[in-house]
Amino acid sequence: MADNNSKDPMDTLRKAMGDLETRFDEMSKAIFGTEGFAKTTGVATELGAKMQKGMTDQMSKNLEFFNMPSRADITAIGERLMTMDERLVRIEEALSRLAPPEAGASSGPRRTRKPAAKKPAKKKSD
Image (cartoon, rainbow, N blue to C red; front, side, top):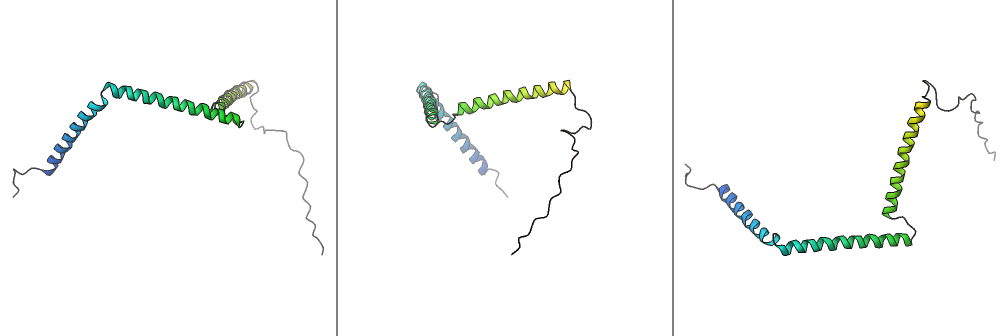
């Protein structure tokens, strides 16, 4: 029979994991909870933003030098195209209210002529 006094190995593992989590939490609070860490993080974030802006500006200058559109130019074109598309939709809706399409009417003029029959290709004689 099993001895009731023996410990379950999983209990030991759970306790060790709990202790490890507690220690890690204490260490992270000691490091990340300081004023110095907060300032350093703020400076690093600001530096990263400045570097990114500088790279974007430099890339725009390079693209302008080669007479190529920048991301801002492409975005502006996209926005203008969306505006034009919205206007076209409104125009189409207004036209359909003024002159609704007739039922069964085909688009374009009626075709009354038949295409000419194709002539058989001439063979080259040797």
